[in-house]
Length: 150
Image 1 (cartoon, rainbow, N blue to C red):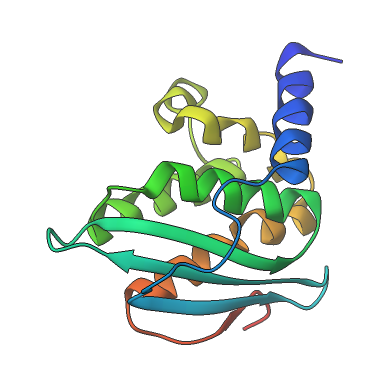
Image 2: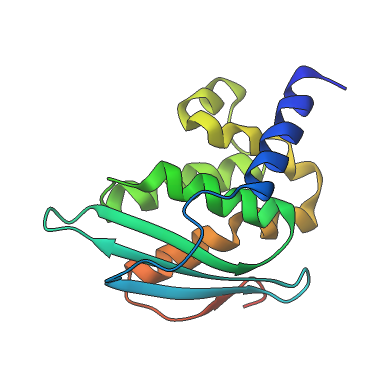
């Protein structure tokens, strides 16, 4: 197994076992649900936007596969303190990463999220990795529930 594949496996398993920011957010100002009916992943993303317009607190809850849970966990760690525009930009780059459209030199810019760089080789798992991100973007835009099949 390559070093990157081993790191990927370790990070995914760790965030699946001990997800960060798992649970509802007290005083949430935004919320959205995400559903991946093919895999059975279903999460709610709660967030509270601070007075500066940035993500002050974020959490997720629900159930899903290890990839979806790890992605949501890493997402919550990464976007705390970001503006909606920064979150949307990051999601665009993450989406390119998991689709195999990001140059390897750009992976480093995504920090811990780069562990998902090989997921494009498993197209059904891409939806697992991006589900929570779609729900987050929906929450930020005031939208409601999202699904990977729409």
